[in-house]
Length: 113
Length: 117
Image (cartoon, rainbow over all chains, first blue to last red):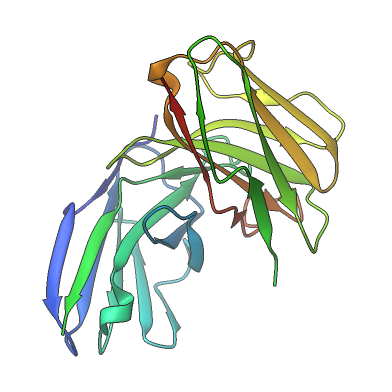
C-alpha cells in the first residue's frame, strides 16, 4: 500500500518568509496529488491539485511542485502570515484509481509574527 | 461554494451505546460521500466510501457491522457507531464530491468529536 511521509511534524517560520513543506510517497505513482489545510478541530479544506504531467502549479501565494522521479511534492507559501498557521496535509489518490484519497500525517506550520 | 455539515459536532456517550453521525451536503448533490477517522496527531484514515442508493465500500480493517453507513439520498449520509467502546473515541470527518471521478474535489465537513466513556 502507499506510504506517504511529510517532512516534519512541525515547522516554525518567521512572518514574511517562505514556508516549504515536503510530501514523499513510496510505491505506485499517483496520477495526481492534492494539498489540504486543516485547522484544529475542523475538517480539511482543499487548496491545490497537481497532476503527474504538471511540474508546478500556483494559486496566489501558494506553489506546488510534483516530481514523479523523486516521488515528491513540495508545497510553498510565500510571504507567510500568522493566519497561514495550520496543519497542511498532502493526499494521493487510491491505488486503484478510485476516487478515494489517502492522507499524509500532516505538517503543523506556525508563522511567528 | 460547496458546504458540507455534520451533526452533532461533538458527542459523549457511554460504552455499549450506539451513536449516529449525520453528514449533509447543503448546496449540492453529493454522488459520493466518504467517512474518515482521525486520532490525535495522526492522519485522516479513510473508513468507507458510499454512493447514494448502494452499499458502502469499507476499507480493510474497518468492521462494517460496527460502523453502519447509510447513504439514503444525494444530500445525506449517516454513520452509526454501534456498541461504541472507548477505543472508538476519535474525530470522525465526512466529505462529499459532486462526481465520481478521482479528481473531483472532496468537500469536508467540520468533523464530529466522539468520546466514549
